[in-house]
Image (tube, rainbow, N blue to C red):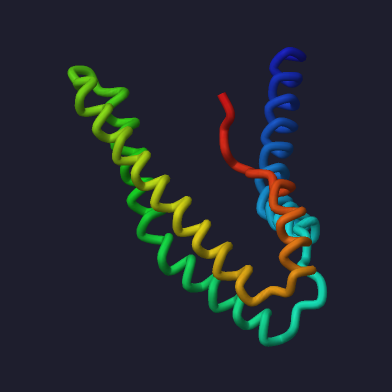
Length: 145
């Protein structure tokens, strides 16, 4: 009888803890996102015109890269399916890997073109600041194996 009571108590405690943890996750994600934004280097002395140009350039980049990101996600899902399905050929898998590589190259070229475009309307001091902080961004959400 005591064993059953302990089991029920333990189960109830774990259940309550799990519910509280799940409720806190969205808030923690939001706080983490805010902290990430605050850590990003801010280009000094931007004029309102420069801010507007950067906003427009960012929207243009997002408009250009969204279809690439979507296609990339589809190819990665296809690759996962091929890798986990019996009877898939190495030729088919390699073809999808090549397609993923081509999409990643296209994405990198779009981002680089965007960076070059942004630099066109910055002052020398602002470009130096941007270049000196470019390597400090950390990629989050990517698994490293």
